Image (cartoon, rainbow, N blue to C red; front, side, top):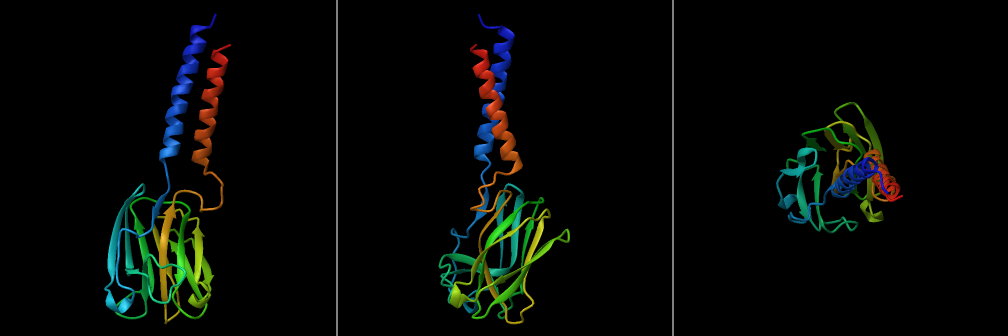
Length: 204
């Protein structure tokens, strides 16, 4: 005969485990790929744009560039991207402003130039990293991962002839391809496993 208290405890654990596991599944990454937007293929045919997106970290505002679709001389990404060039009133910095702090910011960075160029990614807490990207004649695309803890991210270059674009922005979860669950996901999995063990024990 089963112990009623033991069974009740097991059922409670199972309920908590199911809620946590469902939460873990629904807490998917925020990824912004600009595919719902479109623009011309040249900076000269566009104007600087401020974009806003609703995310799990509040509103994201992006400034400093414009949307281009199938941008000229960027064979590595022929979709819609957000970029800037040293002409037509654009800035040499793209700024992303989140309502709340984020973690593990990652994105595709495209070098629009025919020469190798260097870019700096920084947050508003003093964290900064530099990345060198091949020219657009050699793909000119890199997946950049930046473990920020701030809420304002800047992407910039000191090159006076800047020409760069971004796409597939993600945050608050591991960089694609790393396969390492974040601590929150590991906790949810552990609770789920505990619930399943409790149910098995209640059947004894």
